[in-house]
Length: 319
Ligand code: G3I
Image (cartoon, rainbow, N blue to C red):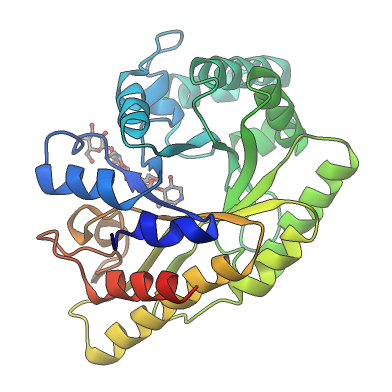
């Protein structure tokens, strides 16, 4: 059995993918890969607030329930993504945000977190409780949460999530923290502060959205630094984009970047899962966000495994 999940099993590492639930059960090639290759899954969109509570007080758990059921059928654990974020908020909330007091916004956030976490109680392995709260310069992101609540919402969010499901592992998740720099250092300082205050944080997720034009981050060193705080770490949204069409040099760079990302996770004992952000290049978020770029995933548009898939297999075999 040379599936990624089987090859990773001896080292105890879970291999995951972000799943587009619209394709699950409707696209055969997609569904087969999703069920066979991975031992953990993340909802690419359907646990975000805009899907979960499209109108205030009306909940839409069905798409995420479908993914949780699929995971249980396939012996997979679920990474819940994500409870607090500045993006993909329901329009009823963004529309009224300005007119809310801090106490009102805090109450809305608490209700959201506890309703969602309770709904999935016992079924989520890791929750991305807070996502992308920092700007690249290391300051708190200027969003509706920090504007009204300062940084207090971060500790609150972890405490509320823990109350609702004490057994779930609670993560802070971000991008551009894979390498040494202002943002990574700001997240490190925040995590230390949370720990000192007794806030229930279990791990830090490194999204790991890479691009051949920026090269390979010092992910192993960075993750180890966080692990040394007594935290779990995870690679949560890996992909490696490049400009199209892919040249031989770019392909070689992609292979090496994939191998180094996975090796970093294998070499950090507390790195407990390695999740790729999608299955096929055709449904990746990359082409619609970065013009002229793509080829970021492990399967091509026709669901044929790419060289990158073989690289991950080999890396796991050698581990
Ligand atoms: O659901 C609507 C649909 O009704 C509408 O017809 C269609 C038209 O554009 O849009 C659909 O919503 C899209 C949604 O994905 C679901 O497909 C949004 O436009 C689109 O912006 C959204 O993109 C997602 C993106 O987060 C939003 O920020 C991507 O799929 C998803 O891969 C991406 O994931 C994020 C992580 O959550 C956090 N880290 C970064 C990562 C990449 O941006």
